[in-house]
Length: 58
Image 1 (cartoon, rainbow, N blue to C red):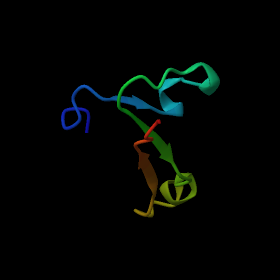
Image 2: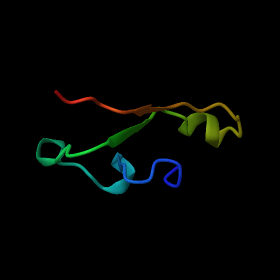
Image 3: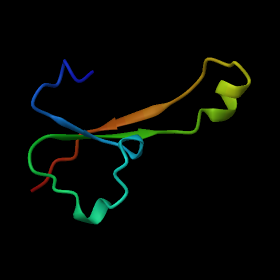
């Protein structure tokens, strides 16, 4: 995905960003929010979900 959105940043918990209040939304930033898929993964079920958000700041 990163090769398709060059010049954009990606923000996610998996990247270790835990201090959201101090994150600078300067420029395009995609927020990746993985929804719970752990139980399905553990049961070898192929169903998971996640969200890709592109916040627009005024």
